Image (cartoon, rainbow, N blue to C red):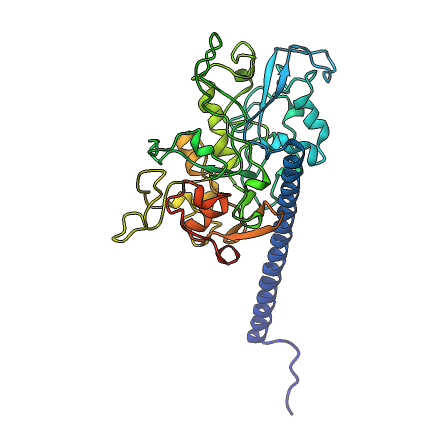
Length: 408
C-alpha cells in the first residue's frame, strides 16, 4: 500500500520560497515606481505654480523677475517681530527671483518681511542662519522652508533654511570654462532679452556719484512675454537643479555683506570688488545657463558660426548637459548628487538642469505647459529652449530651428 505524504519536500519548499521572493521583488519595485511617479507629479505641480507666478509677475510688474533684485532697505532699530526687542543694524534687502514670486505663491507674510521697511531680513541673534549654503546672518523668517521650493525626489539637502531645488532660465554664460571672456560678449551684453529670461535687476555700477560718469555693469533689460518670439511653449521659465542654493540667498552673499557699514545705501552704488562677484554668482546658483559650445566645434565641416560673437565655439562640456555630472549608468548616478559649488567655476559648470527623476528633468514653459525634458537631447535644442529669440541670440549656430525635438 502506498504511503501518504504528510509534508512538502525540500525542492517544493524552495520553489515556493523563490516564488514568494520574486513576487515581493516585483511588488517592491512597483511600489517604488508608484512613489516616484507621485513625487514627480508633485514636482510638476510645484513648477506649474512657479510658471503661473512668473506670468502674474510679468503682468503686474511689466517684466519677469530677475535672479537678483533689490527689495528695499531696513533703516536699523528694533525688529517688530522680536519678542525681546532685538535691534538690528541697517541693511539693504537683496534677494532672488524666489523672493519676487512669493506673493503669487501664497507666501505673502514672508514677502512682506522682504519688502516692508519696518522688517529686517537679517538677525544678530542666535536664531540667525549659519551655514555654507543658506549663508550667515539671515533672519529665519526671511529664509523660511517653503514646501513649494522643494522637489520631494531631490536627495540633496542644501542647508537648514530656505531649502530649494528650483532655478530660473538665466540665459547665456559669458565666460568659458577656464574663466576667460568670450570675444564680443560681456556680462552685460550676455543678458540680452534674446539670450534668456532672467537677468540681474540690481544695478551695481561704476557710475561716480560726483559727476555721473560711468556705465552700469550689471542690470539687464526688462523681459516680457512679448519678447518671446520663438514660442512660449518652446521657452523654459523654471526648471530643476539638485545643486540649487536656498531661495532667499542672492549669490554667495552673507548678512554682513548687506549691512550699511559694508554696502552703500543708494540704488546706483559704486562698483564694489567684494560684493560684485558674490552677486554675480546668483546667475548660476539660482539659474540654468547655456554655454557658447556646440557639438560640431572642431569638426572638419562646421556651420557658419554666429558673426555677432566673432569666434568659434568649443565642444560641449559633459557637465553642461542636462543631468551633467553623473558618470554611472543612468542620469541618477550618485556622482551627480555629491557635487558641491565651492567656487565660481563650479557655479558656472553646475548651472544646468538636473534632478533625481529618471533620465530627465521637469520644466515649466512660458506658456505654462509642463514638459519632461530628456537628458539625451541635443545641446542645440537645449540652447533653443533657453533663448526667447534664437536667430537674434548669441548661440554659436543661430540658424538652428527647433521642430519636434522638444517633444522627444
